[in-house]
Image (tube, rainbow, N blue to C red; front, side):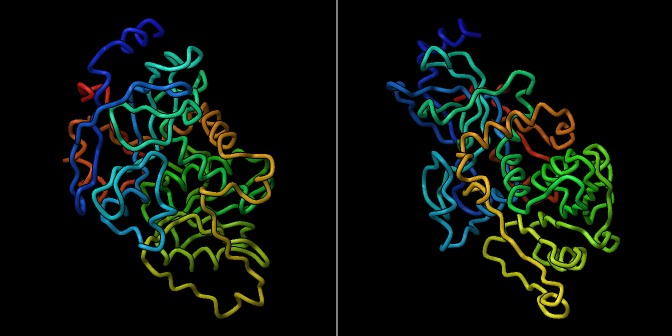
Length: 340
């Protein structure tokens, strides 16, 4: 691997790349760009796989990022601006082809848009731990979001924990919760087929109308505001409903009448841009992301992997896939293309 990386460092083809740009609603193109030589403290990475964070990227592809959130929604190394044209994404895994000797030839994770290769500061990449396959490593950003959500709730051993939504982030949260000693975790989804996912993650399963009650924590990760009513109904007195979904420009009709106040329920938001308050003094973002990568050694996360799309086919396939109701992580495969 190290010898191959050194050869690639002198290959002129490694100095160009192609990136996926959203040019108008649900229309994408692969555009070529030059890669400069890495400077001191920088690396050049050849991408192997990138993951599509479906909920967020569907909003980006649709041009539905609210104007008020466009600055906060910028991802690391993004180019362009919302709504269009924009180069977006944050789940890339690749091999370091040029840079510091301790990273040369290493497989790394980087919060970077969908692109066949890129140059970034060395501090922007994290080595993928041994025992974590490349295919699972693309889930690191999603798992980091779920980990932060459990801290925000907080979800603790022995609790009854309800997770609404069997998409990637919800399923990640369910699996982390299921590993808490003594926790009773139920994954709720409208699709009965999600029962198989719940079983693979070590959770019980329920349809929304059969969600169990008296829960200590409910984590709403469906992306649908109406699911908040199910979550509020399911929790016990003085419990927490944690809103992990981001609804974009949509408004949410939240049932705060009835017994909401007398039961002293808490409605809490969680967003990965800030480390959960209780952990923030000791956990910088890099440490939290490194922990998420480490946790992906758990083979149960294989259940969250979905379609593998060749990079060349991404402009045609992604608009279709982002419109479909899918649960697993769509991955873009750069190993099947010439890379740019």
